[in-house]
Length: 256
Image 1 (cartoon, rainbow, N blue to C red):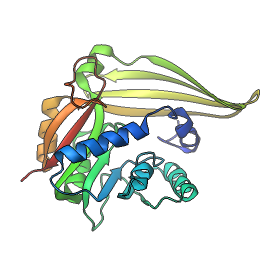
Image 2: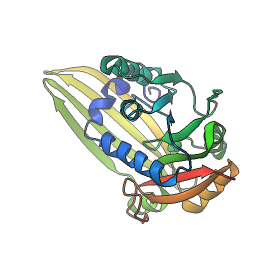
Image 3: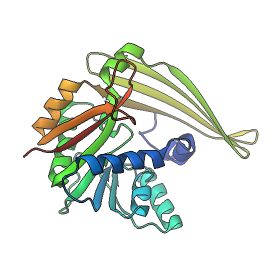
């Protein structure tokens, strides 16, 4: 089994999520900043930035953006896109549990369920303490994650995705295994890349994701020096989540 976000999966990542509304999500980030930040936001730290789909867009909107990811393959793609689009964005390879820079930032984002990759309480707390350490007083922290009540209600299933571009086809089969006691779903991805009539790449990865409950989140955030201001549906944050809301968005600020 390949490591999470290995070379073959990373190479296919942007094509797999080409229809994801990154521009709309950046609009949401700016909307949240305008409503909840108590300071003007000039600098943004993107923890788990992946191939830079939020970082580069926000940098083009005029923010000073720093992106961090543990996957060298994902960061290489982000750097290539930044060069191609002539976008200035600082990118660092690091485990976000131990990321440490002298700078602080006006806003911090952690998008596409990155917090869910932290399986144990100590891992979650380490990441949230990274946030607390690097967030300016009056700033805002935004992240989306999987909502426990919906995961237990809907349960993970098997999905097949086929993407075609020119003479290239990507087939991804995903299936999920639920661990109720540990609040985890292990998603198995099997990916084939086909060019013409020939399979040119095949890879398999297991992504183990944690899901969360509201009171659990309040406790974990408070223990890390953060105070939750809003838990809403992602991306419609003004709507309260329910048993059909797989993805939620949390907004928090430093504790006074």
